[in-house]
Length: 222
Figure 1 (cartoon, rainbow, N blue to C red):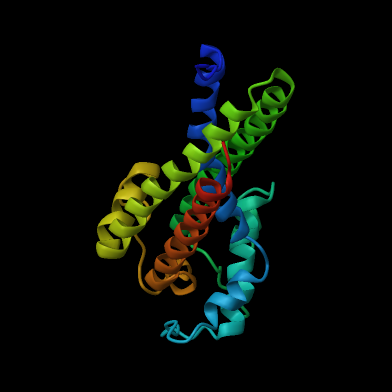
Figure 2 (tube, rainbow, N blue to C red):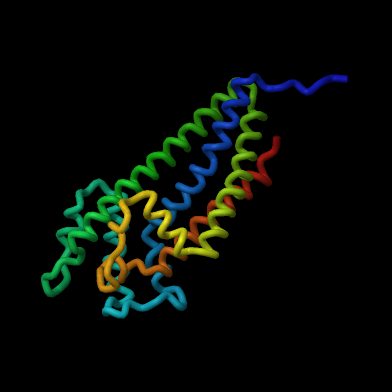
């Protein structure tokens, strides 16, 4: 009876690198999708999305919200937001909000770079696997990564749905100095991005990432 030939040890180790890279790529891809120009008009017009009690119309939210999201992915300094003014000449953002947006930009752009690096790594390893004769081991890593994504993101999504406030606070305390991200209800950031916005964001990212993980887990053959 023939025994199944095993891939070289190094190839199997690389397969696990592939597995661990998959959730990173899928999460960051989902995050990047939400920076498209069609997202905010869709989100702000959802039934039940809370109105701004301080007076922003939906169109004004779209206007200022798009500029905020553009800032997070462009190469401009914080003056991109700091120079913005309302019709009466008052600044759109106060100093505390600007400091936080600068911190957020660092986190967002760092996350996107990590995701891009993980994607490039997967492509390089895939090409290497194709030329080195261990394509099956590579595919096994992809499928395993899909199921790992389902387990990890499923757990995070479930926890965030059951205890969103706890999740939201823990997330911000990990990536930002404690209490630097808390604002007044009348501040622009809260008026543009209320809690409902972040709950929806978590649902969108979780759903897209889970879908990607399920597709890899079910469709990749080994």
